[in-house]
Length: 352
Ligand code: APR
Image 1: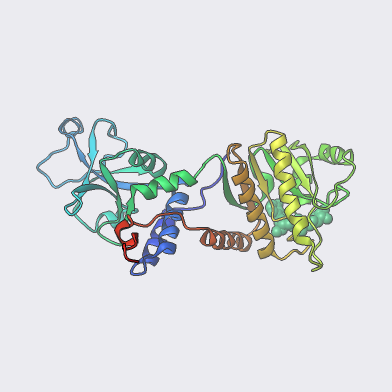
Image 2 (image 1 turned 90 degrees about the horizontal axis):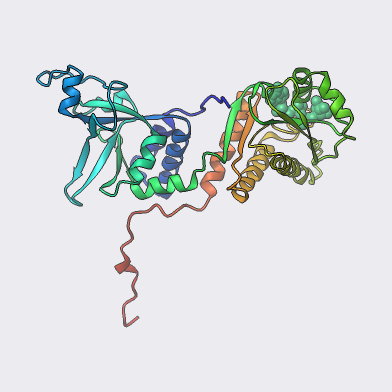
Protein backbone atom coordinates (compact mmCIF):
# COMPACT_ATOMS: atom_id res chain seq x y z
CA UNK A 1 0.00 0.00 0.00
CA UNK A 2 1.32 3.43 -0.78
CA UNK A 3 -0.09 6.18 1.38
CA UNK A 4 1.43 9.59 1.61
CA UNK A 5 2.58 10.10 5.18
CA UNK A 6 0.27 12.74 6.53
CA UNK A 7 2.47 14.02 9.29
CA UNK A 8 5.92 15.53 9.42
CA UNK A 9 8.16 16.21 12.39
CA UNK A 10 6.11 19.29 13.30
CA UNK A 11 3.66 16.93 15.02
CA UNK A 12 6.31 16.73 17.73
CA UNK A 13 7.58 20.30 17.60
CA UNK A 14 4.19 21.98 17.84
CA UNK A 15 2.92 20.28 21.02
CA UNK A 16 6.35 20.69 22.66
CA UNK A 17 6.27 24.44 21.96
CA UNK A 18 2.65 24.65 23.08
CA UNK A 19 3.51 22.90 26.35
CA UNK A 20 6.29 25.32 27.28
CA UNK A 21 5.66 26.72 30.72
CA UNK A 22 2.38 24.82 30.91
CA UNK A 23 3.43 21.21 31.39
CA UNK A 24 0.63 18.98 32.59
CA UNK A 25 -0.78 15.55 31.81
CA UNK A 26 -2.72 16.82 28.83
CA UNK A 27 0.21 18.59 27.17
CA UNK A 28 2.42 15.57 27.80
CA UNK A 29 -0.12 13.27 26.15
CA UNK A 30 -0.30 15.60 23.15
CA UNK A 31 3.49 15.39 22.79
CA UNK A 32 3.52 11.61 23.12
CA UNK A 33 0.72 11.28 20.58
CA UNK A 34 2.78 13.51 18.25
CA UNK A 35 5.78 11.23 18.72
CA UNK A 36 3.62 8.17 17.98
CA UNK A 37 2.28 9.76 14.78
CA UNK A 38 5.79 10.83 13.75
CA UNK A 39 7.00 7.28 14.31
CA UNK A 40 4.28 5.87 12.07
CA UNK A 41 4.92 8.46 9.38
CA UNK A 42 8.60 7.70 8.82
CA UNK A 43 9.80 10.89 10.53
CA UNK A 44 13.41 11.01 11.62
CA UNK A 45 15.47 12.27 14.53
CA UNK A 46 18.90 13.85 14.05
CA UNK A 47 21.10 12.30 16.68
CA UNK A 48 24.58 13.62 17.51
CA UNK A 49 27.24 10.94 17.39
CA UNK A 50 30.91 10.26 18.13
CA UNK A 51 32.66 8.49 15.27
CA UNK A 52 35.16 5.74 16.06
CA UNK A 53 38.81 6.32 15.08
CA UNK A 54 38.52 3.61 12.43
CA UNK A 55 35.50 5.30 10.87
CA UNK A 56 37.28 8.68 10.85
CA UNK A 57 40.26 7.11 9.14
CA UNK A 58 38.19 5.13 6.67
CA UNK A 59 36.13 8.19 5.74
CA UNK A 60 39.26 10.29 5.37
CA UNK A 61 38.11 12.85 7.93
CA UNK A 62 40.69 15.05 9.59
CA UNK A 63 40.30 15.08 13.35
CA UNK A 64 42.15 18.40 13.66
CA UNK A 65 39.73 20.45 11.67
CA UNK A 66 36.42 21.71 12.96
CA UNK A 67 34.65 19.97 10.14
CA UNK A 68 31.52 18.22 11.18
CA UNK A 69 30.49 16.16 8.24
CA UNK A 70 27.13 14.52 8.20
CA UNK A 71 28.05 10.86 7.99
CA UNK A 72 24.58 9.70 6.96
CA UNK A 73 24.74 6.71 4.66
CA UNK A 74 28.54 6.60 4.84
CA UNK A 75 28.77 4.83 8.13
CA UNK A 76 27.71 1.53 9.53
CA UNK A 77 25.55 2.33 12.57
CA UNK A 78 26.53 -0.96 14.17
CA UNK A 79 30.27 -0.30 14.23
CA UNK A 80 31.27 3.21 13.23
CA UNK A 81 29.88 5.42 15.99
CA UNK A 82 28.28 5.73 19.34
CA UNK A 83 25.45 8.06 20.11
CA UNK A 84 26.37 11.08 22.19
CA UNK A 85 24.76 11.36 25.59
CA UNK A 86 24.04 14.05 28.15
CA UNK A 87 24.99 13.10 31.67
CA UNK A 88 22.61 14.01 34.45
CA UNK A 89 24.80 14.55 37.52
CA UNK A 90 21.84 14.50 39.87
CA UNK A 91 20.68 11.03 38.92
CA UNK A 92 24.09 9.98 37.58
CA UNK A 93 22.37 8.63 34.48
CA UNK A 94 22.74 9.25 30.77
CA UNK A 95 20.26 10.68 28.30
CA UNK A 96 20.47 10.30 24.54
CA UNK A 97 20.01 13.45 22.50
CA UNK A 98 17.74 13.94 19.50
CA UNK A 99 16.98 16.96 17.35
CA UNK A 100 13.87 17.40 15.29
CA UNK A 101 15.54 19.64 12.70
CA UNK A 102 18.88 20.95 11.48
CA UNK A 103 17.98 24.32 12.97
CA UNK A 104 17.53 22.76 16.41
CA UNK A 105 20.82 20.83 16.20
CA UNK A 106 22.72 24.01 15.34
CA UNK A 107 21.61 25.85 18.46
CA UNK A 108 24.31 24.14 20.55
CA UNK A 109 27.77 22.59 20.17
CA UNK A 110 28.20 21.06 16.73
CA UNK A 111 28.56 17.36 16.25
CA UNK A 112 28.47 14.80 13.50
CA UNK A 113 24.85 13.79 13.10
CA UNK A 114 23.18 10.53 12.23
CA UNK A 115 19.62 10.64 10.93
CA UNK A 116 17.50 7.79 12.16
CA UNK A 117 13.79 6.99 11.76
CA UNK A 118 11.80 7.09 14.97
CA UNK A 119 10.41 3.63 14.30
CA UNK A 120 13.98 2.35 14.42
CA UNK A 121 15.44 4.24 17.37
CA UNK A 122 12.51 4.22 19.81
CA UNK A 123 12.22 0.42 20.23
CA UNK A 124 16.00 0.25 20.60
CA UNK A 125 16.10 2.89 23.32
CA UNK A 126 13.26 1.13 25.13
CA UNK A 127 15.56 -1.86 25.41
CA UNK A 128 18.64 -0.09 26.83
CA UNK A 129 18.53 -0.03 30.61
CA UNK A 130 21.59 2.20 30.86
CA UNK A 131 19.89 5.28 29.42
CA UNK A 132 17.12 7.17 31.08
CA UNK A 133 15.53 8.33 27.87
CA UNK A 134 15.95 10.89 25.10
CA UNK A 135 16.20 14.65 25.49
CA UNK A 136 14.53 16.14 22.43
CA UNK A 137 15.94 19.51 21.29
CA UNK A 138 18.07 20.11 24.42
CA UNK A 139 19.28 23.54 23.30
CA UNK A 140 15.80 24.80 22.47
CA UNK A 141 12.41 23.75 23.77
CA UNK A 142 13.76 20.68 25.55
CA UNK A 143 11.47 17.76 26.24
CA UNK A 144 12.63 14.79 28.25
CA UNK A 145 11.19 11.62 26.83
CA UNK A 146 11.63 9.06 29.56
CA UNK A 147 12.02 5.37 28.71
CA UNK A 148 8.73 4.63 30.46
CA UNK A 149 7.03 7.05 28.04
CA UNK A 150 8.62 5.33 25.04
CA UNK A 151 7.42 1.98 26.35
CA UNK A 152 3.91 3.42 26.68
CA UNK A 153 3.98 4.77 23.12
CA UNK A 154 5.09 1.38 21.80
CA UNK A 155 2.55 -0.47 23.91
CA UNK A 156 -0.46 1.43 22.58
CA UNK A 157 0.84 1.45 19.02
CA UNK A 158 0.10 -1.47 16.76
CA UNK A 159 1.23 -0.45 13.29
CA UNK A 160 -0.77 -3.30 11.77
CA UNK A 161 -3.95 -1.97 13.34
CA UNK A 162 -4.29 1.67 12.73
CA UNK A 163 -6.27 4.61 11.49
CA UNK A 164 -4.87 6.56 8.55
CA UNK A 165 -6.15 9.52 6.61
CA UNK A 166 -5.95 10.12 2.93
CA UNK A 167 -6.83 13.24 1.02
CA UNK A 168 -8.22 12.69 -2.47
CA UNK A 169 -10.07 10.21 -4.63
CA UNK A 170 -10.86 6.84 -3.05
CA UNK A 171 -10.81 5.08 -6.43
CA UNK A 172 -7.04 5.58 -6.67
CA UNK A 173 -6.19 3.79 -3.43
CA UNK A 174 -4.23 0.57 -3.42
CA UNK A 175 -5.73 -1.24 -0.50
CA UNK A 176 -7.53 -4.54 -0.01
CA UNK A 177 -10.98 -2.95 -0.08
CA UNK A 178 -12.64 0.40 -0.61
CA UNK A 179 -16.10 1.15 0.71
CA UNK A 180 -18.82 2.58 -1.50
CA UNK A 181 -21.50 4.93 -0.18
CA UNK A 182 -24.22 3.26 -2.25
CA UNK A 183 -28.01 3.41 -2.53
CA UNK A 184 -30.43 0.62 -1.52
CA UNK A 185 -30.83 -0.60 -5.09
CA UNK A 186 -27.06 -0.75 -5.67
CA UNK A 187 -27.62 0.76 -9.07
CA UNK A 188 -24.81 3.29 -8.95
CA UNK A 189 -25.38 7.01 -8.71
CA UNK A 190 -23.41 10.22 -8.32
CA UNK A 191 -20.74 11.21 -5.80
CA UNK A 192 -18.34 8.52 -4.64
CA UNK A 193 -20.71 5.80 -5.92
CA UNK A 194 -20.53 7.21 -9.44
CA UNK A 195 -16.74 7.54 -9.29
CA UNK A 196 -16.31 3.94 -8.12
CA UNK A 197 -18.64 2.53 -10.79
CA UNK A 198 -16.89 4.51 -13.46
CA UNK A 199 -13.42 3.25 -12.57
CA UNK A 200 -14.41 -0.34 -11.66
CA UNK A 201 -16.18 -0.77 -15.01
CA UNK A 202 -19.30 -2.47 -16.33
CA UNK A 203 -18.65 -5.78 -14.60
CA UNK A 204 -19.41 -4.02 -11.32
CA UNK A 205 -22.94 -3.09 -12.50
CA UNK A 206 -23.62 -6.69 -13.32
CA UNK A 207 -22.27 -7.97 -9.98
CA UNK A 208 -24.31 -5.39 -8.09
CA UNK A 209 -27.50 -6.30 -9.93
CA UNK A 210 -27.14 -9.86 -8.63
CA UNK A 211 -26.90 -8.86 -4.97
CA UNK A 212 -30.60 -8.18 -4.38
CA UNK A 213 -30.09 -4.63 -3.12
CA UNK A 214 -28.77 -3.55 0.27
CA UNK A 215 -30.76 -2.12 3.17
CA UNK A 216 -29.65 1.02 4.99
CA UNK A 217 -26.89 0.12 7.43
CA UNK A 218 -26.09 -3.21 5.76
CA UNK A 219 -22.98 -4.07 3.75
CA UNK A 220 -22.40 -6.28 0.70
CA UNK A 221 -19.21 -7.16 -1.11
CA UNK A 222 -18.08 -7.44 -4.73
CA UNK A 223 -14.74 -7.69 -6.44
CA UNK A 224 -12.93 -4.47 -7.27
CA UNK A 225 -12.73 -5.23 -11.01
CA UNK A 226 -10.76 -2.45 -12.71
CA UNK A 227 -9.95 -0.71 -9.42
CA UNK A 228 -6.60 -1.11 -7.72
CA UNK A 229 -8.48 -2.33 -4.65
CA UNK A 230 -9.29 -6.06 -4.67
CA UNK A 231 -12.77 -5.62 -3.20
CA UNK A 232 -15.55 -3.09 -2.93
CA UNK A 233 -17.76 -3.14 0.12
CA UNK A 234 -21.08 -1.48 -0.65
CA UNK A 235 -22.92 0.03 2.26
CA UNK A 236 -25.92 2.32 2.36
CA UNK A 237 -25.80 5.27 4.70
CA UNK A 238 -28.93 6.90 6.13
CA UNK A 239 -30.53 9.90 4.48
CA UNK A 240 -30.29 12.61 7.15
CA UNK A 241 -33.67 13.97 8.14
CA UNK A 242 -32.90 14.90 11.75
CA UNK A 243 -35.21 12.17 13.11
CA UNK A 244 -32.66 10.82 15.54
CA UNK A 245 -32.14 7.24 14.36
CA UNK A 246 -29.65 8.17 11.62
CA UNK A 247 -26.63 7.92 13.91
CA UNK A 248 -27.23 4.26 14.70
CA UNK A 249 -27.72 3.42 11.01
CA UNK A 250 -24.48 5.17 10.15
CA UNK A 251 -22.66 3.30 12.94
CA UNK A 252 -24.08 0.04 11.48
CA UNK A 253 -22.58 0.93 8.09
CA UNK A 254 -19.07 1.16 9.56
CA UNK A 255 -19.48 -1.84 11.82
CA UNK A 256 -20.98 -4.15 9.17
CA UNK A 257 -18.36 -3.07 6.62
CA UNK A 258 -15.51 -3.84 9.01
CA UNK A 259 -17.00 -7.20 10.00
CA UNK A 260 -17.57 -8.16 6.37
CA UNK A 261 -14.00 -7.14 5.56
CA UNK A 262 -12.66 -9.40 8.29
CA UNK A 263 -14.75 -12.32 6.98
CA UNK A 264 -12.95 -11.88 3.65
CA UNK A 265 -9.47 -11.66 5.14
CA UNK A 266 -9.20 -7.99 4.21
CA UNK A 267 -6.53 -6.14 6.16
CA UNK A 268 -6.77 -2.64 4.73
CA UNK A 269 -10.02 -0.81 4.08
CA UNK A 270 -10.70 2.74 2.92
CA UNK A 271 -13.92 4.53 3.82
CA UNK A 272 -15.37 7.67 2.24
CA UNK A 273 -17.34 9.95 4.54
CA UNK A 274 -20.54 7.93 4.16
CA UNK A 275 -23.82 9.91 3.99
CA UNK A 276 -22.13 13.32 4.14
CA UNK A 277 -22.82 14.20 0.48
CA UNK A 278 -26.18 13.63 -1.21
CA UNK A 279 -27.58 12.14 2.03
CA UNK A 280 -26.69 15.33 3.96
CA UNK A 281 -25.49 13.87 7.27
CA UNK A 282 -23.69 16.64 9.24
CA UNK A 283 -19.96 16.05 8.64
CA UNK A 284 -18.71 16.54 12.20
CA UNK A 285 -21.16 14.08 13.73
CA UNK A 286 -20.55 11.60 10.91
CA UNK A 287 -16.78 11.81 11.44
CA UNK A 288 -17.20 11.25 15.13
CA UNK A 289 -19.34 8.12 14.53
CA UNK A 290 -16.86 6.82 11.93
CA UNK A 291 -13.84 7.30 14.18
CA UNK A 292 -15.61 5.99 17.23
CA UNK A 293 -16.71 2.74 15.59
CA UNK A 294 -13.36 2.23 13.86
CA UNK A 295 -11.33 2.74 17.03
CA UNK A 296 -13.60 0.50 19.08
CA UNK A 297 -13.48 -2.16 16.39
CA UNK A 298 -9.68 -1.99 16.22
CA UNK A 299 -9.46 -2.33 19.97
CA UNK A 300 -11.84 -5.29 20.00
CA UNK A 301 -9.94 -7.01 17.18
CA UNK A 302 -6.47 -5.83 18.08
CA UNK A 303 -4.89 -9.17 17.13
CA UNK A 304 -6.38 -9.16 13.62
CA UNK A 305 -4.40 -6.28 12.11
CA UNK A 306 -6.54 -3.88 10.08
CA UNK A 307 -5.53 -0.61 8.53
CA UNK A 308 -8.53 1.70 8.37
CA UNK A 309 -8.13 4.59 5.98
CA UNK A 310 -10.51 7.52 6.05
CA UNK A 311 -10.40 8.97 2.58
CA UNK A 312 -11.45 12.61 2.63
CA UNK A 313 -12.32 14.13 -0.70
CA UNK A 314 -11.38 17.64 0.33
CA UNK A 315 -9.26 19.46 2.89
CA UNK A 316 -12.28 20.66 4.90
CA UNK A 317 -13.38 17.10 5.55
CA UNK A 318 -9.83 16.07 6.49
CA UNK A 319 -9.66 18.96 8.96
CA UNK A 320 -12.94 17.83 10.50
CA UNK A 321 -11.74 14.23 10.93
CA UNK A 322 -8.47 15.31 12.48
CA UNK A 323 -10.15 17.72 14.85
CA UNK A 324 -12.62 15.06 15.97
CA UNK A 325 -9.80 12.54 16.42
CA UNK A 326 -7.73 14.93 18.48
CA UNK A 327 -10.76 15.70 20.70
CA UNK A 328 -11.32 11.98 21.16
CA UNK A 329 -7.67 11.43 22.11
CA UNK A 330 -7.85 14.17 24.72
CA UNK A 331 -10.89 12.57 26.31
CA UNK A 332 -9.19 9.20 26.69
CA UNK A 333 -8.00 8.32 30.16
CA UNK A 334 -4.45 9.53 30.45
CA UNK A 335 -1.97 6.68 30.77
CA UNK A 336 0.32 6.73 33.77
CA UNK A 337 3.04 8.96 32.43
CA UNK A 338 3.82 11.02 35.48
CA UNK A 339 7.19 11.00 37.16
CA UNK A 340 7.91 8.56 39.95
CA UNK A 341 5.35 9.02 42.69
CA UNK A 342 6.72 9.71 46.13
CA UNK A 343 4.98 6.85 47.88
CA UNK A 344 5.95 8.12 51.32
CA UNK A 345 3.46 10.95 50.89
CA UNK A 346 0.64 8.50 50.43
CA UNK A 347 1.16 6.43 53.54
CA UNK A 348 -1.28 7.61 56.18
CA UNK A 349 0.24 8.46 59.51
CA UNK A 350 -0.31 5.90 62.26
CA UNK A 351 -2.48 8.22 64.37
CA UNK A 352 -4.85 9.12 61.52
N1 APR B 1 -13.42 9.79 -3.21
C1 APR B 1 -13.65 10.00 -1.89
N2 APR B 1 -14.70 10.66 -1.42
C2 APR B 1 -15.59 11.16 -2.32
C3 APR B 1 -15.44 10.98 -3.70
C4 APR B 1 -14.29 10.27 -4.14
N3 APR B 1 -14.06 10.05 -5.44
N4 APR B 1 -16.46 11.60 -4.32
C5 APR B 1 -17.22 12.16 -3.36
N5 APR B 1 -16.71 11.88 -2.15
C6 APR B 1 -17.18 12.26 -0.82
C7 APR B 1 -18.10 13.44 -0.74
O1 APR B 1 -17.33 14.64 -0.68
C8 APR B 1 -18.84 13.18 0.54
O2 APR B 1 -18.13 13.73 1.65
O3 APR B 1 -17.98 11.18 -0.33
C9 APR B 1 -18.84 11.67 0.68
C10 APR B 1 -20.20 11.01 0.50
O4 APR B 1 -20.95 11.68 -0.50
P1 APR B 1 -21.90 10.92 -1.53
O5 APR B 1 -21.10 10.23 -2.57
O6 APR B 1 -22.91 11.89 -2.02
O7 APR B 1 -22.59 9.76 -0.65
P2 APR B 1 -23.84 9.83 0.36
O8 APR B 1 -23.98 11.13 1.02
O9 APR B 1 -23.72 8.61 1.22
O10 APR B 1 -25.07 9.65 -0.60
C11 APR B 1 -25.31 8.42 -1.22
O11 APR B 1 -25.50 9.36 -3.42
O12 APR B 1 -24.53 8.91 -5.43
C12 APR B 1 -25.53 8.60 -4.62
O13 APR B 1 -25.99 6.31 -5.19
C13 APR B 1 -25.59 7.18 -4.17
O14 APR B 1 -27.86 7.48 -3.68
C14 APR B 1 -26.59 7.34 -3.09
C15 APR B 1 -26.20 8.63 -2.44
